[in-house]
Image (cartoon, rainbow, N blue to C red):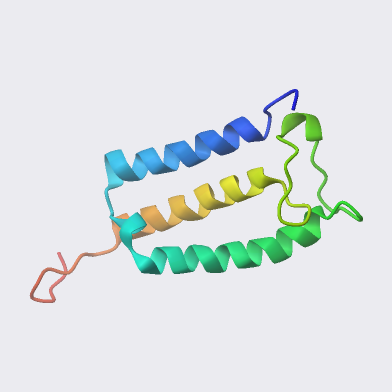
Length: 110
């Protein structure tokens, strides 16, 4: 792990998305079971697709191991891919949730 070309931006992306939710957007998304179920679905498909794309026996996408932790799980998926994936999907869901019309107690949109 001589460099952090993939790892550092992946970690920064996660921290930035969490900070965006907690300090700015405050949608409450992290407390919703629907969010966590959707993330489970996303990860399941990410494992299938990313596992196929990054399998070391016949990679379609090749990572420079000097720019990552070198940790691959499950199968041959670089762990940084999960961080980037989480940050990207969560950022989109947060922005979607923020712009969605809210209903007051009487069922009317505000």
